[in-house]
Length: 199
Image 1 (tube, rainbow, N blue to C red):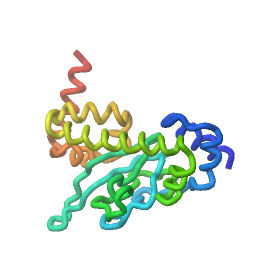
Image 2: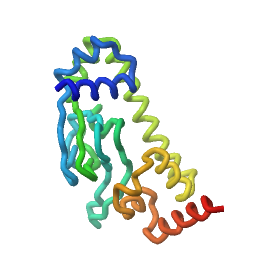
Image 3: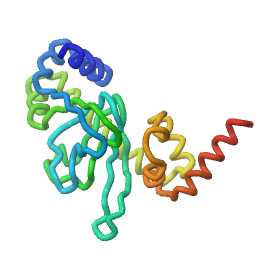
Image 4: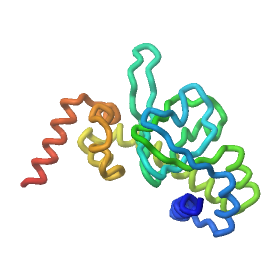
């Protein structure tokens, strides 16, 4: 239990200026969960009730087209990051996406009800909520801007910066889906980048 609390405390402190008391008072509400590859953190058309903090693993957020059943990856989240369908979590409306573990993973999670209880009772947790909203607004806007203003190669290099080992951890077709390109196009991008490194 102590090891779990230490790991959780460290990640929370890295994100927000929470006091020892803030964190101690919250530990009753944070639960640890091990997830297998392919397990869902949240399902499409369901309200996202929990905020997750990834201790180990990688998750994808994706949309499944109702007519073609084709999956479109929108976001990846890995160690040290929060995972949630933030719009659904805040508005209490059904999520438009699936959130799936892409490898065996470990997370801490807290319910919407318990987190909002902390917002009301602890000023620093209220600040945490503001930082969380700013974070997910930035993530969403950055993703939109990347699709509008950056080439697939630039999007690929930015993805590697955000998740350095992602290409070794998940199949290439998931990367292609995220970038909005085909697998052969991804292979050409990777080859060009490797050739630049050799020069």
